[in-house]
Amino acid sequence: MLQFIINNGMINLNDVQSCMEDMKRKELLEKHPYKIWQGKDGKWYTYLPDARKGRVLMKKTTREAVEDDVIGYLKAELDDPTVEDVFLEWIDRKAEMGEVSLPTCERYKIDFGRFFSELGKRRIKSVGEDELEDFLIGCIAKHRLTAKGFSNLKIITRGIFKRARKKKYVQFGITELISNMEVSRRAFKSGRKPDSEDVFNEEEFAKVERALMDELDIVNLGLLLMFLSGLRVGELAALKWSDVDGCSIKVQRTETRHRDSSGKYAYGIKESPKTEAGIREVVIPSKCAWILRKIRLKNPFGEFVFEKDWKRVKTYSFRKRLYQVCDKAGVPRKSPHKIRKTYASILLDNQVSEKLITELMGHTDIQCTNQFYGRDRKTSERKAEMLDCIPEFQLGNG
Image (cartoon, rainbow, N blue to C red; front, side, top):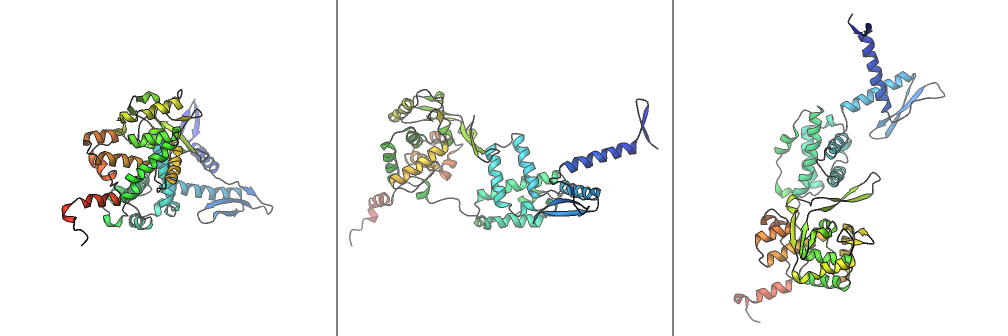
């Protein structure tokens, strides 16, 4: 018989193994979410989680028999977790390692709930390659996904099943599966809205400008500054007076938002803008420098440019006010991001140099500005006037 000698004493290896098994047994039982109790009939009871019913009652003649079933269930859980369990393990680990921000982590969780409401409850080992491919392709039509939306779905799926393969829950390679999928671009919903919905046209711009000028409080002044600078609303809310020098504004941080442990939104400041190219210097027209001076008069002592009652003005305040201003001006509601698209379109319409446009917008190249931001802002009347000037179209009254 093998023996282990410590301090001139001898311990039976079988006893050591038995002790370790008892410790593991105790550790597993501590993870059981329900109590174990003895009924009036002398039987022993507990509940086990159930995917369909929530939980099911279990009855045995001895406590040990109940514990054995609980341990068997928990071991199966550890060896074959649900798809959701693997997702949470993957995303929480990425957040802990600082690979994703809290807002990105929250967005992934929202997307998981949207796409994996049914599949997420399944055991990971029960999901095969063919079924997973059918699921991914089926989501395109079911959720009317754009190409970008499908890309987000693939990021989550790749993360889940790469983690699952690393833990040896599955054997197939998710990267190869996704790369071999054949999906026609026609299957995707177009992500581009009509130009009239994506920017403030010339007439709407004038109406909104007048509505903002009617009441020059600090929030309306901020929205005017957005129209003149192309700042993202998160960048606007995070501006400090140390970033402002005359007509020049350094963009180097943005507001963040995520849900805290209570489920409420928590707002913070990230010491970098949305993208690396977003670190930039924007310049407003010198004739509009009065806006910054007026903001300073309304907030002379604050650290942040936009403060009200000694508190930083959050992005939601600018968004809510813009909707109210649109209603007052009698134009369709548009988000703050539509101001940024309007700004880019104005720069393109006025033949500003491509280099300056990319610098002001914080883009890496002009193709990004042209494809995602440049829109036609002319009204139907203005287009008709332009066509009237073409000699070939001047046919008279007939």
